[in-house]
Length: 165
Image (cartoon, rainbow, N blue to C red; front, side):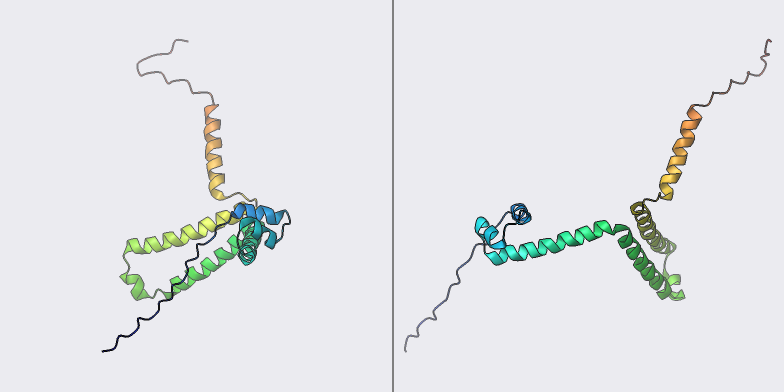
């Protein structure tokens, strides 16, 4: 019997990932430092910093757009939600509705109303308009405050007592 040589195992060198300070990288980039200079300062590859800055820039741009057009974003989501709700309701045939328990029907309707109401209120707030809940609460508080300042009525005389005038 001949001895066969054991196959040579190639071990792969494990590279420890290098960490960098994201806040520092963003501040250096904002100060105008190049990606290669930032990479040297952070002891990482230039491509790592370049990819990070590209992703961070996209995130910042998306966030700024959202902040500028938040009311419109809410309105768009609300329109999409209404479309989905209409399709869901249209997909319920009489058999499905008959199979649902009253509590399940109520839960579906409640969920639809909550989504619509929440988005409606958010859109109005973003447009600087009041929402009905705030108006109702304000009127309730105003009414209570007005009642506090009214003169308390004189107590009615007890039965059997006569007033002496």
